Each structure stands twice: as structure tokens, then as C-alpha cells.
Image (cartoon, rainbow, N blue to C red; front, side, top):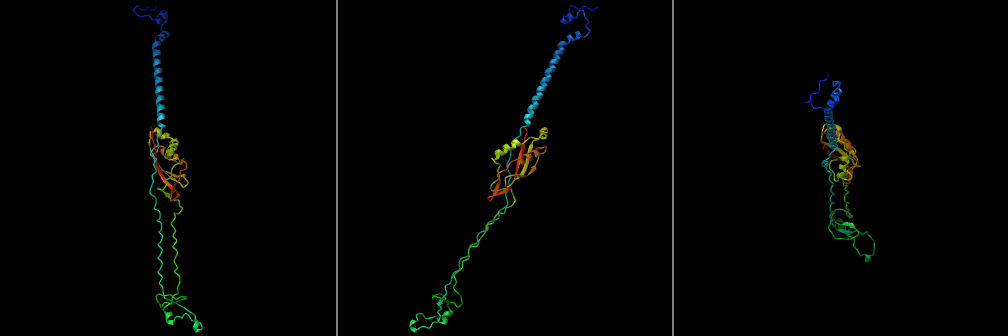
Length: 273
């Protein structure tokens, strides 16, 4: 026989429903603990939802943060070129030699004429020995050398060829007109910024750094001989090499009016924000 409920115990709906029934069956205990069970389930659900929301927010914020890449310090490193061979100066022409006037006596062939027709007297043998035989008489310095009068010959000025720079594949580090990226440095920054992708290995390890890349701008503006001058690792070196090789043709450099090969060294900076 069931024990009656004391009058001091508060009467609940469950007590009224199970007043004359078996409370040990299980249904009574389920109804009695219903409120605490619902409260516990509600708090567990709120906690799980909050944890999921916070985790999603942190992950999205971190992903957006590592995708930002800053590229700075793109300054070409140039070195003084070899000296150009000096131009050979033109030799000064020799002054013309002074012509010394010598005494001349007109040579006349012996001719039998009448005495009345003789107008000029031929020179004597003694006069011919100290003068030059000519077709005219002219006063001047007497000489005993047998010479003939010839006009002075002035040699033409010597032809001097200015040394020309031979066509070669020499690589310069400094030239008169530097090669440039088409559109200028700002366009080069835009190109590198769009092409660069931050390596996942560096992102996972939070690696930042600066990779120094060297390359040659050929005579036609193409980029060759791309090398890593100083690397960082974690995939940053390979990514910088890939992007530099993708660059389009530059405007080639010039030395003495000719296109030449020029070597450049630029730093590419990777930074997580």
C-alpha cells in the first residue's frame, strides 16, 4: 500500500498524475527531470553554436590576411662599364717646305743667223755652271748643284679612321640609356603584384623575406639568364623566379647608339599582413 503524500510537500502535476500509480516504472522520473534536461541541452547547443561561429570568423580573417602580398624595393643595381677605347687624334699636316729661288739662265740652242737678227746673247759656260737651265732668265741664288725646277708636291692629309665598337655580346652593368619596362616602374609593380602567389609552405610557417633576383635584358628586350642572387627558401625563391621569367620584353638599353645586353638585380619582398 502506497504511503500518502505528507501535507507539507508541495503538490505538483506529476504527483497528482502518479498519485495511485507505480512511480518506479520510469515515466515519473523522466517527467520529473524534464526541466533540468531541457536546460542542459539548451546550454550545450548555445555553446556549440558559439564555438562554430568563432572558429569560422577566425579562419576567414586569417585567410584574408595571408593573401595580401606587398612588393617593394625594385631598384636596379648597376655597375660601371668597361672604358671605351680613346679616339685616335688626327696628325697635324707638315708645313710646306720653303722653296729657294735659284738663279736661272735661259738655254738657247745655237742658231746660225745674220748678225743683224741676233737679239739675245746666249749665256756663257761659266754662267750655266752656277745657274739652272730653264726657258727663261730669272735672278736668284747661284748654285753649283744640278737641279731641275719642279713644282712642290703637298701630300694629302692622312686618312684617320675613328675606332668603332665592334658588335659583341658583352654584358654591361651600366650604360648611357638604361633599359626600362614598357610603361615604366609602376606598370612593372602592377604586373608583379598580379602574377605573384604567396607559397602555401611559407604561409603555414609564417615566413616573410626578400629574394634578390638577377637577370639580363637582351638587345631585343627579352629577359634571359634569370638567377637567384640571394634566396629565403620555403618556396619564395621559386615563386620569384617564376614571375620574373613571365615578364614581357623590355625597351633595351643603348651604348653609343647601339642596343646592348644589360644585367639587372632587383629585390622582391614577400610580406604577410
